Image (cartoon, rainbow, N blue to C red; front, side):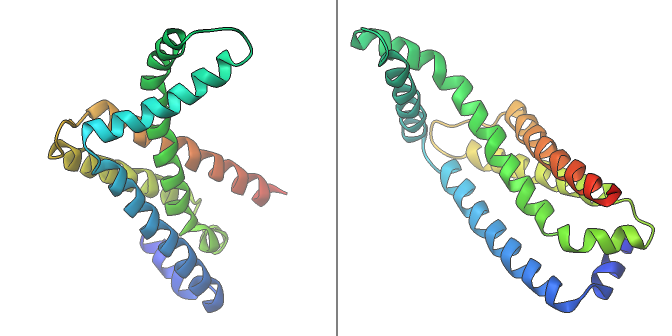
Length: 175
């Protein structure tokens, strides 16, 4: 990390300022959105995800004849995987924003002998800590519970999205 901060000091000032302002503001507001979702009680959160699952079920059944019980049954099947996909994607985007804070200086970092992997690993570890804090916060919300599996899923989502960015940046470097 020491190499990263030395490179950050030597990076072009305009690039650092634009990066810092955009990604830090986006990261801050996105963390507020995540906190807002985590602050919802169990009924509100469940109604939101079930409503989305019900919309998907209605769309799928729009191609054939069905009754209301069929829609509700199918929505019941979709609700849990949809919630987990939400966790995965939500923290994947958080990982992208966090990694985006490093993007302008990764090139300079690599030119000074760094591989850039340390920055991505730091992003993933930080997201792991944030996901753990988010689940701890949910423990105190009525009807909600903290889940180690959600922390792992959140971290995995972040790792996948950060890995994609790493691969893209690595391919650009090799060209």
